[in-house]
Image 1 (spheres, rainbow, N blue to C red):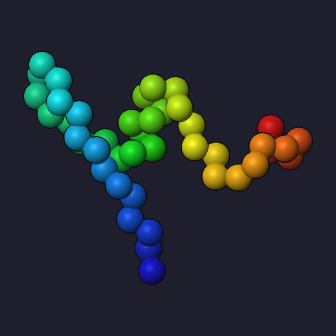
Image 2 (spheres, rainbow, N blue to C red; image 1 turned 30 degrees about the vertical axis):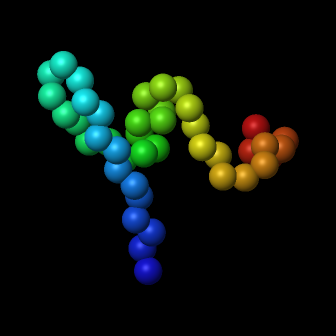
Length: 42
């Protein structure tokens, strides 16, 4: 079964724009790794 990715809607002066949650976080330079950071992941 595929996992659905949540979407968010951003409201600006130019209208609305939809993003998947990971793209929106990346826009603010926030990254989700999903596991502990160790030497292999780093």
